[in-house]
Image (cartoon, rainbow, N blue to C red; front, side, top):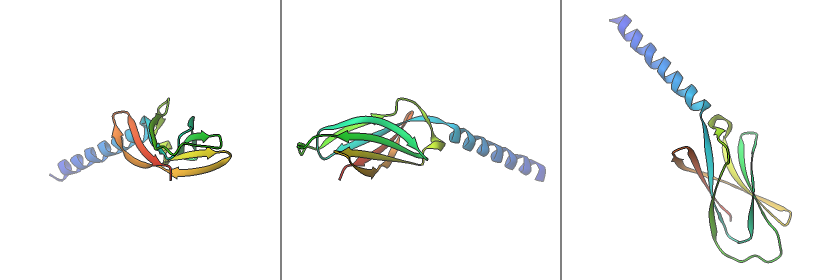
Length: 119
């Protein structure tokens, strides 16, 4: 009986380790649902910096309409889940950069969804 219980326990340990390894190596798309408080924002792409996925935006000019604008941006390639520790939105306006941390919303199929709001 002890051998049977030991074998069952070993199976659970091996299956759990396999599941963790599979999840850690999984690649997925990342989406940012961004809300801006002013119009005139251009998307400049994304980059991975030391475990932080940075979605970059730029706003140029002197006058911006006070309009709430929401849009979703998705990476063009899958990124390993283990490589992304957090997601941020970086907005540069006339040379001044502000950073907003994105909150995890959930997973939809092959996408991790995050949300950030400009303040």
